[in-house]
Image: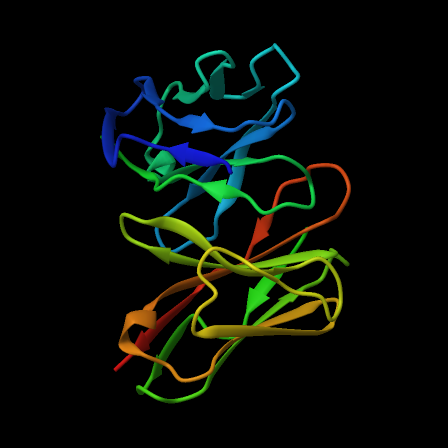
Length: 114
Length: 113
């Protein structure tokens, strides 16, 4: 069974600064997929970034990047040049295939201070 | 754009009532999911479905059932609502095959009094 752990219930960052959200996971599978989802207040959950375990290169999407450490089973999200609109709950998630459900962490609430 | 809609944003029901939460997606996705979101617990999977008339139990199916008569619609049913089912309910869908993202609906905040 897969597990996903987010050890930071809450984080805060100054506008324009960089913040890193932590995520660790556990799986016995060799192929799996990792995701970061963002849930803004009272808005729909959206995908921020995804990483395939077989890819060594860390995924990047504009100001969002991941630090994927496969041996350590760590998958952290870095947000650069933080903006007020980045304030949200962030969930780390994992799955082993397209037909299996995601396993989510408990989330990290990110506040951005102007 | 993929759109997942849920029948209600807010719902208040009484203990013992039968409650239906509806979810509709417009992108012909095979997979649909119902999650429950509670503070400090993250998202927990209730049921999911790979195809019409198919369903699989998730991590917390007790007290819930589902129905999928049409591909685009996935209903969550609370047979006899209880106060401990007060929560945010999220529906999601995804295409089958390659690992594509799940697309989420806006959620239904259910209060059982």
